[in-house]
Structures are given as C-alpha cells and as structure tokens.
Image (cartoon, rainbow, N blue to C red; front, side, top):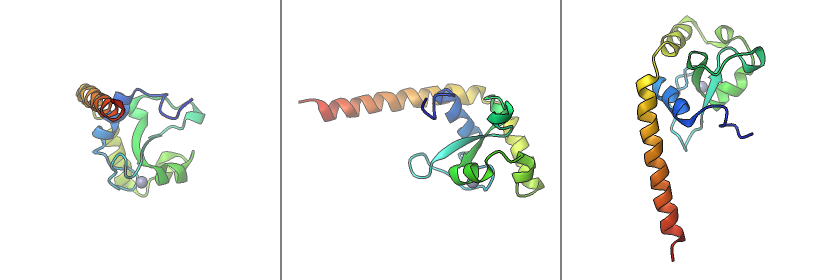
Length: 121
Ligand SMILES: [Zn+2]
C-alpha cells in the first residue's frame, strides 16, 4: 500500500490549504516538492484515530517522525500551539476540497500534456 492511498488527494490538499501549508507543530512553511508535507493524526492511528479532517493536521516530516505516538497535547510546545491546532482543525474544508479537485485536475492534465510532449515522435 502506498503511503498516500489512505486519503483522497483532494482531501489531503484541502487540509494543507486549511492549515496555510504550514506545519502546525513548528510553524515551518512547506512547499510541495521542496520540503515534504505530511498529515499527522492527532489521535494516532494505532489508537484508532480516524482519518477525519478534525483529527488530521499538516506537519513537516521531522515533527511527524519525532512525535511518533506521543499524546498531541504533550508534544505541542505550549498552549498557543494547542490553541492554534484546535482553531485549524475546526475550519471547514468543504469549499477547499472543491478548489483542491480543480487544482489536481489541472495538474494531471498538465502532466499528461508534458508526458505526451516528451514521448511523441
Ligand atoms: Zn514541523
């Protein structure tokens, strides 16, 4: 199973967008393709944490891997971080998902044109 198949791409992108493309743990701004974005489960998957957006936050890979399965409120650096995470996880992703779908469609068709340009005689 690939690491991206547990969640739809548009939902993943919508959550990154909801979180302003920043790691909510350390505040580092991430750019797809330069620094890798990841999603972190607040309630860990090993403890039955759901794939619902209210349980998922944008994280850089180094925060994600150093947290492992620690309780999220203990891993958070301070109360401001906890408040920020609670604010973000309550934001709706409905309209962001619509936009994310369009972005993904555009990227896919751009990729197709690029590939066909590369492989056409
Ligand atoms: Zn981070």
